[in-house]
Length: 475
Ligand SMILES: [Fe+2]
Ligand SMILES: [Fe+2]
Image (tube, rainbow, N blue to C red; front, side, top):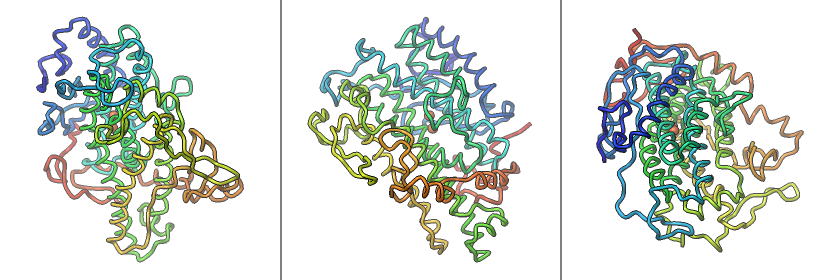
């Protein structure tokens, strides 16, 4: 089961050749997918040879093979993590029962909704990022963008496989709808808010892959616990791909910061105007981008209290992050959890049933994880001897979902008046001027080994290749 059949039109390790109806359905979906990729995938890049990794096995070691391929020829396929023998449901009302290999009738609607919501984010991010190749800061970065894009395309395949195999006609219709919605479209947008935002520049891209792909990690970790075994296994393999996306984000922002610090020290200034004149992104602007991407991303976890979240957990469909490593009863019946609410103009904590607060539990785990990289960015600033500290904003800042929706809260977590918000918001969130400045830096640098002025080169190349390797061939 671990090895992948590349002799098939659709590479897979799910014995697709033995299920002719399913294979036929997926082979009918395949040209529609390629059509979508041509329309909505990376702009103007169809003929480039890109140094991409492709899965050759789902073993943790050595799953990837690297080589130059044209993106439309990328071998998108269906790869599931190996099945675990005698796996049992380890949380919720079905605790201890064998995992499901088919969809239980009573959970069908909820499972479909979970899979469609996850599936919808995958093509959405490709659509959001489709113009970025035109303004890449280097070949190395261009290659990383394309790698992320083809893998998000593969994540769509992963979800469409589940829809086709387990949800019959409904599933096939959902598979088509996933190719029809468009990020940011007025009439037929993607399902979740953050996936309808623009990713207009590379600083946004790095922030997105750091913060928003990390939301993907947490959602996938929760789904990797699922009692529906095919979902758990596909989520597990997707996680190995996701790790690279977050690396692209963390190292990308880090290199932007490093370059800014170099110029700050050269010019001996922290004046944003002088730094901008020197063509680098000042640290307060980077902080505002963090504030924006962090707040938009934590909304993705949903309302702080949600009966759906309770149902998904109790019925064994979606666990907590690291469910298997937790030592409580995995039922959570009497357990409580602290959520925030506003009382008399102040943020206060209150205890609510944990089952209803599982979105908040996952959001808090996410927040802990996302702080780690920000601290590593601070190390870069510290090493340069610059007294400036980046931080993630308070979780009540700039929220649009749940109890905190539309509350006016500062990045430090102070409830503020509308008046103060309007006065300060330009210090807290990227302004049109910030965005226009960042956009003005976005040229196209494609000579091997050259980097745009606003970003430092990486310490290492991809797959032990030199930094000035020809990662993308243009002719
Ligand atoms: Fe993904
Ligand atoms: Fe991703």
